[in-house]
Image (cartoon, rainbow, N blue to C red):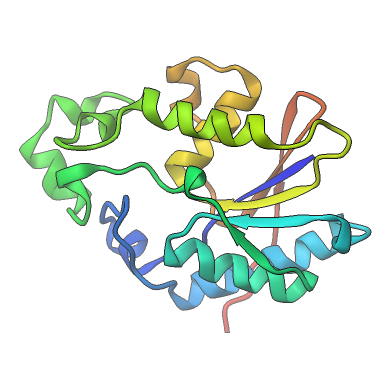
Length: 195
């Protein structure tokens, strides 16, 4: 079983700015989301000591994983294969600016892969597929992974055998966990209280 988590909201998310391989800190809401997901996972996982907690190397994922790790008493492992998609020259750019500059590209469902110098869908699918293949088979597979919007979509798409269009059409909540088990994916929402 895999519990897949997207990192909590960041400053760039709130600004509608492409992050890619750049980073920005979690907002107060993002920290609350990470803590809430930790509490949710406490209720879902009977024996946390049997589980691994893996994170992308980017700070926003590491910080979210740290909050989950505190709740479950687990150390955070890092795996670069679940890092976010690189958007090349579009990393750090506001989406509204990109939409104004590239109106034809932004009409497509997977416009992020048109970024100059960015990663291709196929390269992301290959590295994510390699990560999935490296995990033990079910039922021995007991992994929590903190990833990103783009790469998390590709994890779910690869797990389910979805097409590129189906993969990229999936939602990317920051207040939910996806349970990947027995060939299916289930979304489990959590309640987030911001103080």
